[in-house]
Amino acid sequence: MLDAADRRIVEALFENARLSLKELSGRVNLSSPSVAERLRRLEERGVIRAFTVEVDPRALGYQLQAMVRIRPLPGRLHTVQEQLAGIPEIVECDKVTGDDCFIARMLVRTIEQLDEILDRIADKAETSTAIVKSQPIPRRLPRLP
Image 1: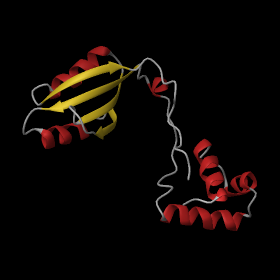
Image 2: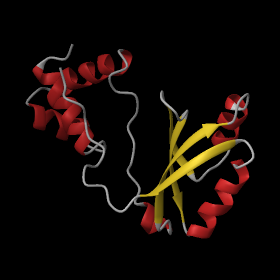
Image 3: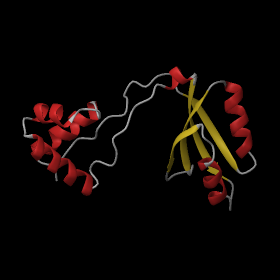
Protein backbone atom coordinates (compact mmCIF):
# COMPACT_ATOMS: atom_id res chain seq x y z
CA MET A 1 0.00 0.00 0.00
CA LEU A 2 1.19 3.52 -0.75
CA ASP A 3 0.95 6.41 1.65
CA ALA A 4 0.21 9.95 0.49
CA ALA A 5 3.90 10.87 0.10
CA ASP A 6 4.62 7.78 -2.01
CA ARG A 7 1.63 8.58 -4.22
CA ARG A 8 2.90 12.14 -4.76
CA ILE A 9 6.35 10.79 -5.68
CA VAL A 10 4.96 8.28 -8.18
CA GLU A 11 2.63 10.86 -9.73
CA ALA A 12 5.42 13.43 -10.08
CA LEU A 13 7.76 10.90 -11.70
CA PHE A 14 5.04 9.68 -14.04
CA GLU A 15 4.66 13.26 -15.29
CA ASN A 16 8.43 13.73 -15.61
CA ALA A 17 10.83 10.88 -14.87
CA ARG A 18 13.78 13.24 -15.36
CA LEU A 19 13.13 15.28 -12.22
CA SER A 20 16.24 15.69 -10.12
CA LEU A 21 16.10 14.50 -6.54
CA LYS A 22 16.08 18.14 -5.42
CA GLU A 23 13.17 19.04 -7.74
CA LEU A 24 11.25 15.93 -6.71
CA SER A 25 11.82 16.70 -3.03
CA GLY A 26 10.45 20.20 -3.53
CA ARG A 27 7.34 18.91 -5.32
CA VAL A 28 6.47 16.42 -2.61
CA ASN A 29 7.55 18.59 0.34
CA LEU A 30 10.07 16.12 1.77
CA SER A 31 13.84 16.25 2.28
CA SER A 32 16.10 14.81 -0.41
CA PRO A 33 17.33 11.95 1.82
CA SER A 34 13.72 11.03 2.67
CA VAL A 35 12.72 11.01 -1.00
CA ALA A 36 15.82 8.98 -1.93
CA GLU A 37 14.93 6.37 0.70
CA ARG A 38 11.30 6.25 -0.45
CA LEU A 39 12.43 5.83 -4.07
CA ARG A 40 14.72 2.98 -3.07
CA ARG A 41 11.85 1.23 -1.26
CA LEU A 42 9.41 1.83 -4.15
CA GLU A 43 11.92 0.22 -6.52
CA GLU A 44 12.60 -2.71 -4.17
CA ARG A 45 8.86 -3.37 -3.87
CA GLY A 46 8.47 -3.25 -7.65
CA VAL A 47 6.14 -0.23 -7.61
CA ILE A 48 8.62 1.66 -9.79
CA ARG A 49 10.13 -0.65 -12.41
CA ALA A 50 11.93 1.84 -14.65
CA PHE A 51 12.58 5.46 -15.42
CA THR A 52 11.95 5.97 -19.11
CA VAL A 53 11.38 8.40 -21.97
CA GLU A 54 8.41 8.75 -24.26
CA VAL A 55 9.23 8.89 -27.96
CA ASP A 56 6.93 10.32 -30.63
CA PRO A 57 6.74 7.65 -33.34
CA ARG A 58 5.78 10.22 -36.00
CA ALA A 59 9.03 12.09 -35.37
CA LEU A 60 10.80 8.84 -36.31
CA GLY A 61 8.79 8.39 -39.51
CA TYR A 62 6.18 5.93 -38.25
CA GLN A 63 2.99 7.33 -39.74
CA LEU A 64 0.66 4.48 -38.78
CA GLN A 65 -0.16 2.62 -35.61
CA ALA A 66 -2.12 -0.60 -35.81
CA MET A 67 -3.72 -2.83 -33.23
CA VAL A 68 -3.56 -6.43 -34.43
CA ARG A 69 -5.56 -9.26 -32.91
CA ILE A 70 -3.71 -12.52 -33.51
CA ARG A 71 -5.18 -16.02 -33.31
CA PRO A 72 -2.55 -18.71 -33.84
CA LEU A 73 -3.57 -21.79 -35.79
CA PRO A 74 -3.81 -25.00 -33.74
CA GLY A 75 -0.44 -26.07 -32.39
CA ARG A 76 1.26 -22.79 -33.41
CA LEU A 77 0.93 -20.70 -30.21
CA HIS A 78 4.59 -20.85 -29.16
CA THR A 79 5.87 -20.49 -32.72
CA VAL A 80 3.74 -17.38 -33.24
CA GLN A 81 4.80 -15.91 -29.90
CA GLU A 82 8.47 -16.36 -30.79
CA GLN A 83 7.93 -14.87 -34.23
CA LEU A 84 6.09 -11.85 -32.81
CA ALA A 85 8.98 -11.21 -30.41
CA GLY A 86 11.31 -10.95 -33.41
CA ILE A 87 9.29 -8.28 -35.23
CA PRO A 88 10.70 -4.88 -34.19
CA GLU A 89 7.65 -3.00 -35.46
CA ILE A 90 5.62 -4.66 -32.68
CA VAL A 91 6.20 -2.31 -29.78
CA GLU A 92 3.76 -3.95 -27.35
CA CYS A 93 2.03 -7.29 -27.26
CA ASP A 94 -0.35 -8.76 -24.70
CA LYS A 95 -1.33 -12.39 -24.33
CA VAL A 96 -5.08 -12.33 -23.72
CA THR A 97 -8.07 -14.53 -23.07
CA GLY A 98 -10.92 -14.94 -25.50
CA ASP A 99 -10.95 -15.87 -29.17
CA ASP A 100 -7.59 -14.24 -29.87
CA CYS A 101 -4.38 -15.11 -28.06
CA PHE A 102 -2.43 -11.89 -28.64
CA ILE A 103 -3.12 -8.22 -29.15
CA ALA A 104 -0.15 -6.35 -30.60
CA ARG A 105 0.51 -2.65 -31.10
CA MET A 106 2.53 -2.04 -34.25
CA LEU A 107 4.24 1.05 -35.59
CA VAL A 108 4.73 1.10 -39.36
CA ARG A 109 5.63 3.66 -41.98
CA THR A 110 3.14 2.51 -44.64
CA ILE A 111 0.19 0.20 -45.23
CA GLU A 112 2.47 -1.82 -47.50
CA GLN A 113 4.89 -2.38 -44.63
CA LEU A 114 1.99 -3.50 -42.44
CA ASP A 115 0.91 -5.99 -45.12
CA GLU A 116 4.44 -7.36 -45.46
CA ILE A 117 4.69 -7.98 -41.72
CA LEU A 118 1.28 -9.62 -41.49
CA ASP A 119 2.07 -11.79 -44.51
CA ARG A 120 5.02 -13.25 -42.56
CA ILE A 121 2.68 -14.78 -39.98
CA ALA A 122 -0.29 -15.55 -42.25
CA ASP A 123 0.61 -19.25 -42.50
CA LYS A 124 0.69 -19.56 -38.70
CA ALA A 125 -2.11 -17.30 -37.47
CA GLU A 126 -5.27 -15.44 -38.35
CA THR A 127 -5.15 -11.68 -37.81
CA SER A 128 -7.59 -8.81 -37.55
CA THR A 129 -6.16 -5.31 -37.83
CA ALA A 130 -7.43 -1.89 -36.79
CA ILE A 131 -5.59 1.32 -37.68
CA VAL A 132 -5.31 3.72 -34.74
CA LYS A 133 -6.80 7.11 -35.65
CA SER A 134 -6.00 8.86 -32.37
CA GLN A 135 -5.34 8.15 -28.73
CA PRO A 136 -7.95 10.09 -26.75
CA ILE A 137 -6.69 8.58 -23.49
CA PRO A 138 -2.91 8.29 -23.44
CA ARG A 139 -1.19 5.83 -21.14
CA ARG A 140 -1.81 6.94 -17.60
CA LEU A 141 -1.30 5.83 -14.05
CA PRO A 142 -3.89 3.55 -12.55
CA ARG A 143 -5.65 4.85 -9.47
CA LEU A 144 -3.05 4.70 -6.72
CA PRO A 145 -4.15 2.93 -3.52
